[in-house]
Length: 419
Ligand SMILES: *Cc1c(COP(=O)(O)O)cnc(C)c1O
Image (cartoon, rainbow, N blue to C red; front, side):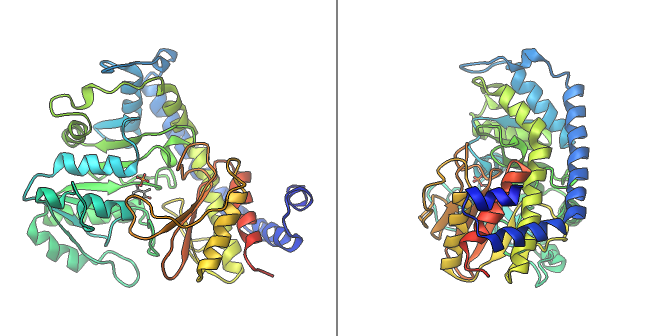
């Protein structure tokens, strides 16, 4: 019925519909595995909400300074519980993942300190925060240096190089879980925990931050051995419902240092009104395992469909996943634009516009972004992004219902020249 309707009402070519239908039928075991992950994460979140004695009264609003905002306090205790952390900062005033990471970095680093990445170049927007790309107000301008070690050819951490780099005793290390805009694999929580053990063995003072963006609730574990984790609420942990926000969780003193950067020294986490958002943020978290599961299924389907259609994909359909991102090497700018056109045509919002590459704040290349989302820029909702550079890889992610992420795959294929 679904595939017939696509042809009769939505302009999908018959051979595209049947190709996706056949591919989907082969994926039932992988989808069942994703459902099991979601079921366990649902229980963990439910348990955390019950332990925090979440109640109807927590959904009332605070304004102004937001002193003693009970909704905010309970939301933060739930996050801390889920990530097995001492403290959490979960705020609508954190604009995005970049902002949460930036607060964690600026809050904990001081002039003369060094920041170290053991997993190669960080996400594009972090380049300006760190000052890898000279930027006004970057860590580099405050006298904070940066070093990184590259991944091996198999995109594994290069432990010899990491151990050598740790001789410089970096004040902080940042580990990015997701591949971001690169072709490497995304690291599982276990792999991240191994990197963390190595850092602890060779440089016990180093504060370890994990960029957990796109990774939350994709597996049954989180990289909880880190001192700090940060991410965005318009990705996985907002469940497609949070209208904005970010989080930092981890050791109390490091989370508080991030809070003092977010608000002001002396104010820290004690202020911050939820402005009527606490119910949506909490409910979004409650929905997140199911939402993430829909996105993961869409990513698996995209991998299977585009691999069969002759493109390289990372990860492969059956590979273990640690984030919701599916990279597809499309090879030409035309293919990238066609794919993004398809994603846009499959959107509930702005389905009639054509995505074009444009400069984006924080990114060095033109980026084409498709996503007609209810929340601006939300990438837990069906979306695709591609920096317009060789080898023309598109990054597909999101879809807050199973049927919608699947529809995105169908529409993207329908726009490509494919027989
Ligand atoms: C999305 C993302 C970020 C932060 O981006 P924002 O758009 O600011 O939320 C950082 N790192 C990774 C790996 C990401 O996917």
